[in-house]
Image 1 (tube, rainbow, N blue to C red):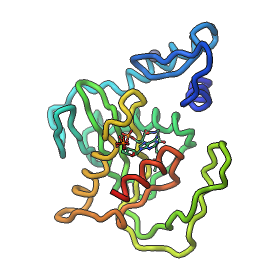
Image 2: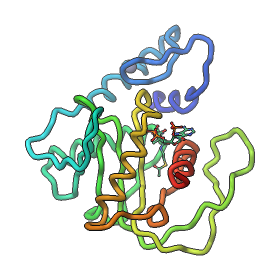
Image 3: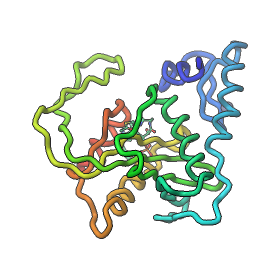
Image 4: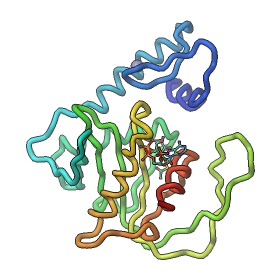
Length: 217
Ligand code: ACO
Ligand code: ZN
């Protein structure tokens, strides 16, 4: 429980004595026994959660030199659904989300970016009808405010991205970009969605930086 707090509080800061684990990516104070215990707990759970053994029938929707993207649909075999649930739990823990129930659980599409034997990226998409454009930067406080101002005029949209996440140690390698490209290509059969037809729900500061960059390029 404390592990996720640690991740949030220490993210991006370089306090004296903090360490980043090279396998699970957690930032913690190695000299603090309590922190070390939290790290060990997080470490095993995390590595187990992202472990990907390969499935007999997997739906590979994109392939790259450094990995591939696998699509999981609601009626897939239980081992695939279980993996998606495990990964989503880790993602939600990191994002600090409470239980979020999808609007149309039987229409959710989950895209997993796999490298070697791990899930290093995850994007959860669901059909939507409208979205509200984010208007401006929030007040210039350093706090992680999520209160972006939104337009109150709904605009039509097709695909809502309810979660996008990349493993901390694999960020800034265009994994998120490739996940979104793949969603635009696969979400609706036979068409490539424009950036206006996709919407990021409740973006975090990281998510907003990514989305702004992605949508302008
Ligand atoms: N700060 C500034 N610019 C960024 C950042 C950032 N943290 N992340 C991405 N960008 C911009 C950059 O311009 C980047 O291109 P560059 O590296 O050539 O400069 C461009 O977006 C593409 O970035 P990617 O490499 O494709 O993004 P990445 O794979 O690192 O994943 C993500 C981005 C998913 C936001 C990652 O940082 C993450 O998982 N963060 C924690 C979880 C999170 O906050 N997710 C968003 C939640 S909102 C939602 O789920 C709807
Ligand atoms: Zn670790």
